[in-house]
Length: 240
Image 1 (cartoon, helix red, strand yellow):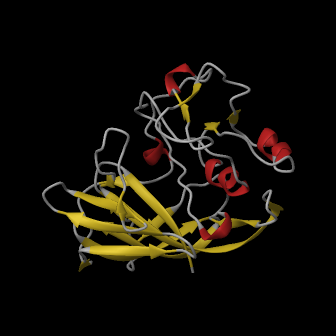
Image 2 (cartoon, rainbow, N blue to C red):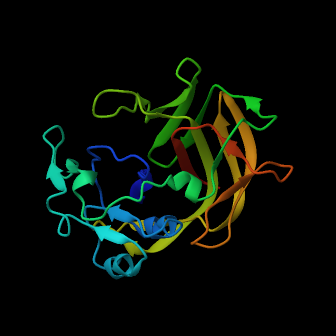
């Protein structure tokens, strides 16, 4: 997003946590990412005036606080505006209970052959960095953000069974923020290369997404579909 920082778009489907947050504003990139799902609910704190028509026209259920006042609250552990939280169970839209990861084409099975031993990997942006370190005893890649362990509200370390570093084109969007910075647009339709982190190994794969309505396929060098370990998948969009 603006000023070289990162932003997390979390997708909850088969299981809904009691609370999600902090909730921030929407970006144009979010709309293309979410077109692969079947009319998802997008919870966001707001957006600049110009992107609002595009959000309203997108095939999703937009849910800013004005449309779901009973679902949002302000937490006491952070300063505003970084304390807006959502209770997913109180949103006016129900979940299908489907596994969104499987719906967009990810398959969970035994690891593919090959790969190289990899203890960790760092993705760097202009003003932020995310590091993923493999912890075999936890069967997880644990996350550090800007050199600090990333933790949930209960203090537990954030991690993922799989991490996909997807190399993409990042270009200026049509919109600017209140300080005049142009919002970047991440192109997720097309093809390119990616690095899949799984079970302490790194796999060089290719990615392809034909249309905004399509899921993204990840394939090995011999053209076979890449498989993932069961659990959370964190996809990181890194500039080419």
